[in-house]
Length: 147
Image (cartoon, rainbow, N blue to C red; front, side, top):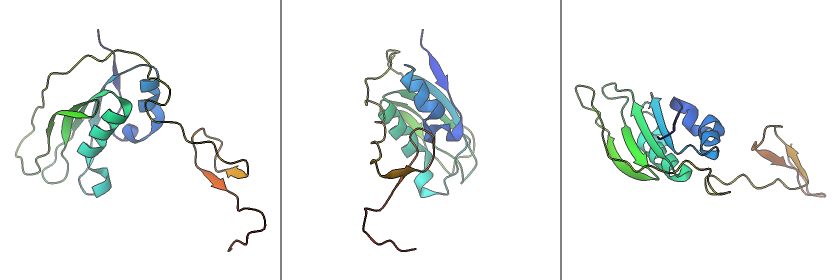
């Protein structure tokens, strides 16, 4: 048997639940999404492929289809594109199919997925009590700051 994790749409860009599941040993994922193609930094295929590589996982992703504005579905395994589609001028839905390896269900080695952020310097003031939150670094003593 193969264990699949499921997350939806923007869950992919946050550490929880996606990377939390990877940390528990889940290596195969299915994901419906509805990302438009309007913002260059949020093109679905690039995000999907890179997440698969960073998480060392298999990702089956199905984007909604809307003529000219939403597309980009694919099957990715450990960063390899096994099958994908990105056809803005299509006239109907499609199906993407590809053979896949079965990856072992095992937690990754420490630092093998996304390494945790480096600890903030002792003089830093934490922006949030949340783990992994950004930190604001205090200026060095004696240095002028603009206000």
